[in-house]
Length: 275
Image 1 (cartoon, one colour):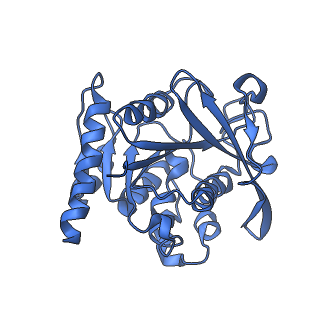
Image 2: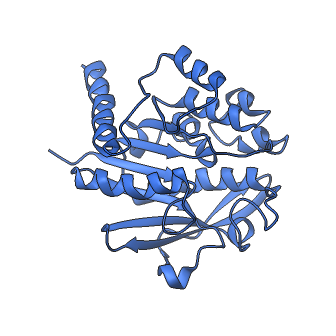
């Protein structure tokens, strides 16, 4: 019996960025799930504040070289990789000089969010899925962490729906308290459209606020994990109304076991429905 495969897509991760709720989970969860016997891959953006020499990043030439068109402009996709030796895991980085060359994350030194964070998110989501397609690595589960990954569930169900690597993929989104303070640009939804995606598919994020992005990701996902305590009531009500499999509470000291079981439950439901 082949190992089940879990693809982790996160906007931040230790030790490459400072510790946050997302960064800590994205660091420990892949290691724990790998130790549970599953095969894993992890992706994050290569923000310019990440020290390549210290973290021993290097470009994967065979995966780089593709161009992604966003807002009528070509942007080269560069893939880099690093290893966390103590965890025996590799981390893939999505890079591009225009979007990730500046020595910062999502905000400038004054804490102001960058105006092109909308395009950076689109580039990141598309870049991950194009790279996984190029790898030919078919994930059973895709687990998304952070607002930057909000388009991934929809892209898998629409733009990449005919791709064999995503044919049986189940998408899980973790919802977190942290996010963007300001809305993304007014034309974010239009920029997100590509082959296989209609403007109706992105209607819900024409106003791209943190709340709408989280609701949107949940709408297109197969299952939800409440990654933070004290999420907004409106978001929780939205999740409840959907009636999708949801992991609402978990033991922070034993969450890897609970997440692993949740993955298995989602995959078992797929097998039952297929029969």
